Image 1 (spheres, one colour):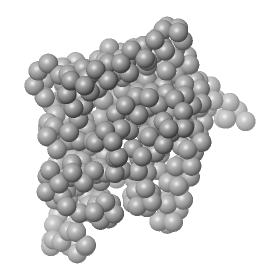
Image 2 (cartoon, one colour; image 1 turned 90 degrees about the horizontal axis):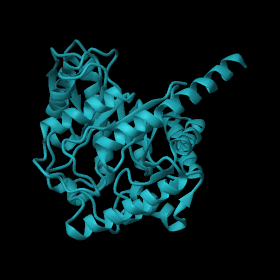
Image 3 (cartoon, helix red, strand yellow; image 1 turned 45 degrees about the horizontal axis):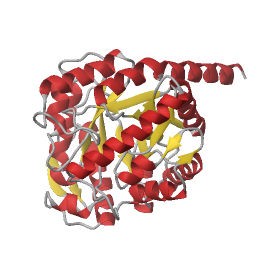
Length: 366
């Protein structure tokens, strides 16, 4: 099966190791980072969402109008806009990008962060709302006749859009989460199901949970699986591990100077995904071929936070281990965003693509 690579469309150079030096939306940096991904073989970049961060949709429109090939994944929290409005926004973005859009639906794993924008539902209620919102948005993308909706979270009459996506039947729907409520919602509605980088055995368990949820929802297909990592690469294994420990020291220094993020608590996270990353870290620092957990432990399992450490060949082989589990979208983001995107694209992506092509040829021959 084909493999895809997802990078980050950060709007400034700040990260867990570097405080940003300018505005939260640095147009020049955002464009340079996007073009670097496009030039060095990445397939898609993610515009993330935070309660105080730049709005991902206009940022994505800015990049879409200034790039040619790179695909765009826009994160969206259903609590911030009504589904009919969101459907038009994303259909317009798909038009601006000539069919390069996907939408990542975030239910929200932290009550405090959700409440910053007026969302006081419980987590399970949020998952039910996300599922309902996705259903409405899909229908708005595809229905050329007016329709009504009477649901638990949304109610309207006689809506029909005059703005439709380029992609048929609609742009891909991406979804993440590691709780039973997440599996049920994403298994039913997602085209792509997103996981964070856990050890191989636990990843296999999650993939099976997603597939079981899709089957329980009556689907005959299953979502594609995406897994996310923080690669730390160097020309030799020794240098890679020196870089890994230096990166961890930089995270600690950055954390001592100011909070890493207002979105995520460093201790006792509410969301199941972060709890799973911290559990993996508690089991040991190193897992499988190259997975390293101290970066997750130091940040409270905040989002994509487990590392793959080694030479480009080692990291590529580690990614292929996940590919062999059924993962066909590999998400990667370094700590020095621009330089690491270039290095990963130059040195790791070609190895993985070549090996995947060999595997596909062998399967076809068999």
